[in-house]
Amino acid sequence: MTTTFTSYSLIARDLGASLARKGAQPDVARETAYYEAKIGSVKSIDDLLGDRRLFAYAMKAHGLEDMTYAKAFMRKVLTEGVSDRTAFANRLADDRYVAFAKAFDFKTYGAETTTLAAATADTTAAYLHQSLEADAGSEDTGVRLALYFARIAPTVSSGYGVLGDPALSQVVKTVLGLPDVSSSEGIARQASLIEERVELASFKDPVKLNRFVQRFTAIWDAQNNAASAPVLNLFADSTTQGLDASLLLSLQRIRSGS
Image 1 (cartoon, helix red, strand yellow):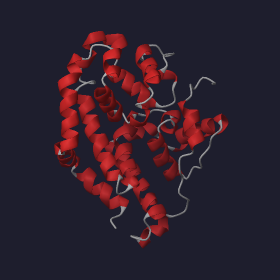
Image 2: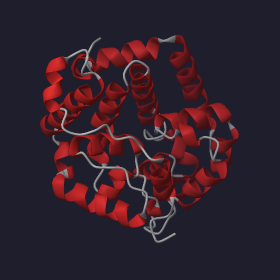
Image 3: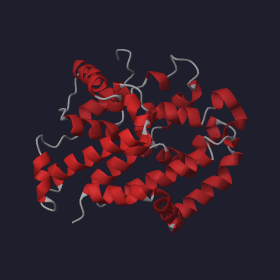
Image 4: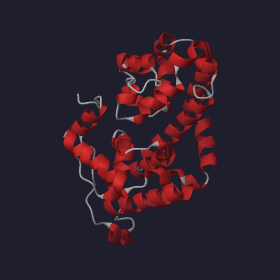
């Protein structure tokens, strides 16, 4: 059994080639071709939400695949945009909604939105990354978490941003050995603790980011793959932390006291 550390390192070492292979797979190529052919004809929020395949593709690209069913919720995200700090997306703990609203900012750009790189090339690139990460995760969840963290962490600037994203949260909590919490007070305390113990701005530095991800993969191996690499037991000083459903529910709520 290959360790998480080794599998992640092999993929990350030649990420471009890994993405090219994933993009050539029939199912991925088919959905990407459909998206590229149709997205230019989308001129409004209604158009985007009205095409199931386009909307599903866009949601998966932004790591929101599990929320594809919540069209009313996403309509509110898109309708209010991000220019106003009190907009719906800006008041959610999960930064992925802000990223989605920026990529499809019909409030600001109107019918021109889908001619911009954020809705076209950037979205298809993100879809490839998500597909590669999902494929890697089918064999080792730790690899998927590591790849996702390496891609998304540089965009996060707060402890709430970390906790609001289940995958980012699991990586950071694994490294720091933090327990699951469900109360608002516990979430606030953990957000503050993350900002104290992790220099989030350092994730913009590829070297520091890679060092953090490698630390995660080593701990993940110690907690989950020790049988394949007994020496990793040396790192096993904390128990595996899962994601609590009540925590995720709390983080989906508006941060302003609901």
